Image (cartoon, rainbow, N blue to C red; front, side, top):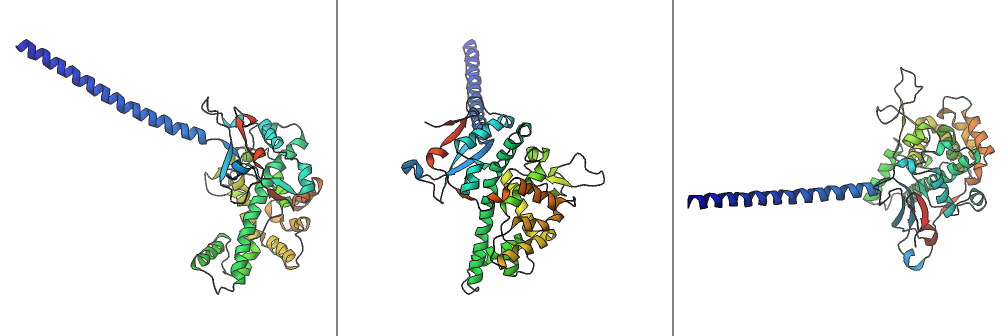
Length: 357
């Protein structure tokens, strides 16, 4: 009997241990599945360098995209079979293919003043290896044109809303509009809270000037600052860790070149800088004089008031030379157009641009 009880205890103990082992393995398996799921989502969201907005309605009627576009197609450098492709694998060749598949040609933009709605968030790592100066400049301009125009569109939208409030003479301004206006005073550093002072600051930056300054400050997209930190305009920051330390910075200086998550943020910061920094007050007043006289802004005349942007005393002359030599004024009146569905419905698969079936 004792022998039977002893065997029974051993048997029950074995069952309990097996049960605990099975239970532990089940919990561990669930935990591993959760971790893999999270990592998969993270990997699939990495390295989205190009976004083309398209309207959901176009999947049905294939008509041009409307303003209320809500669906995105991503040019994703993630290889679904091989986890992910490192950023360096987004090459200049891929960038060229993207533009070619969208029939994005600089000469057409000069003539027709139409720019496809393509957003490039980073330059390829091998951008500085382009041997042809003409190719490098063309890719640089095509990459930045949509970003500059769209940021100017945002500024124009804010400007129009401010004028609507101004035209209402504040008689029917809602609480939300009043709060929104207050935010604009703060964003553009208008301490007077004078709406006319605000309108002087909330205005567009000529495309030719933005392109020329980006070309100078980033070496046409090849500098270390733009490749590592999307810093197109060489903006300084005195917050440690907020940017990239220049290799030839004087030992007693502490500034860094401000870095950004993407090229679009760099463009937005640059425009906010010109529109709010006290150092560019003359630039803004000169721009406003064109508005007052109801004439088109002349970028060549306006750059004379940007000498404070750089330490080089010849900076304005260099800007003027770049604008004229590269015919950048051709882009001052360019606008964004939305791509038809057949052209927009493209994707990068295994780092190659293909059309979806």
